[in-house]
Amino acid sequence: MKVLVRAFAGFRDVMGESTSYDLPDKSDLSTLLSLIASRSEESRALLFDNKGQLRGHIILMVNRKRVSRTVIGTLLLSEGDEVALYPPVAGG
Amino acid sequence: MLTDREIQRYSRQITFIGEENQERLKSAHIVIAGAGGLGCPIAIYLTVAGIGHITIIDCDKVDRTNLNRQILHWERDIGREKTRSACDKLQQLNPEIRIDAITTVITRENASALITGAGLIIDALDNFEGRYILNRAALDHAIPCIHGAVCGYDGHVTTMIPGETACLRCIFPEPPTGSEFPIIGTTAGIIGLLQAHEAIKYIIGRGELLKNRLLLWDGRGSTVSYLDLERDPLCKVCGEFQKRKVTGGKG
Image 1: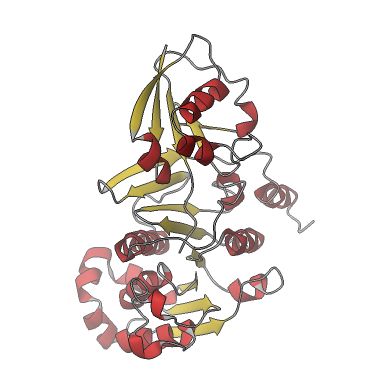
Image 2: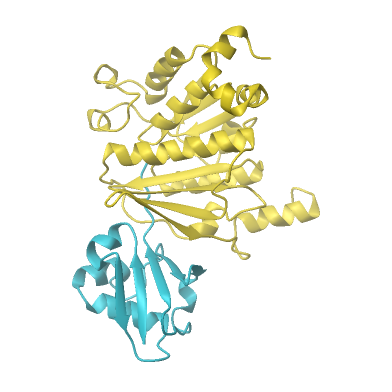
């Protein structure tokens, strides 16, 4: 199945603005994030800390609805889903 | 009541928003937390719009590295307190309004006193530690807060109304990492002006606010996107506010 990933802010420079990923049917969000991370070391470092945990500040949206990082291992994706990733900016 | 001089000064916007709304702006008290890249454009536009009382809070002194974006601070101000530097220029821009300058770090201990009496808070800080403190104080006093943040080409804005929208902790449960951020001045200008624009709309009650919406500005392609937000029912910060609202008490 194909899932569209929209990256925002600094993620855009590394992952591209909008990328389609091919995943086995019934993959969960965690599988998608690992696939994105496998594309480059830079992507992996942006998404995961050195213990392999998804970085806590990243905002995850699936089909425009916010999802908690606690569900990434159980939230199953479907064909045509849109996943948005936003690493919030902090400066002023 | 507006004076003749004020009616003349604001005539171009009074024809748009009406005298009653201009009086609302005059009666408003807004706290701007931060006199940096966001705080400068916010303060300038709210000053010239005729907000009657502005309190501007910052703990820093002007440094040469601030000058690419913090447009109220000039070469001659290096070493001065940012609040004093900002206050001087703002008062020259509009002598009709009251501007208070407070030089301090916003802490858990002083936040409540700093915002007491304000009708609106603008979060123009540069760190999430301070932003979280401000968020909690805003909820404690049931004062709306307009949040903005920037980095490089990117920025975001949202308007938080206690009891109605997600709070800062619902939106950003964990703070982004890093302390010094690269920034191009125009990004701070764009986000700061969006925050000032939200403030004016909130005061006069016209237009759609960015409630439960996070506006994302991307300067690479000059595009705007939105993320839909909602309250986290388990939020430790605004959950307490909801509880107090239901029980009607402070406990």
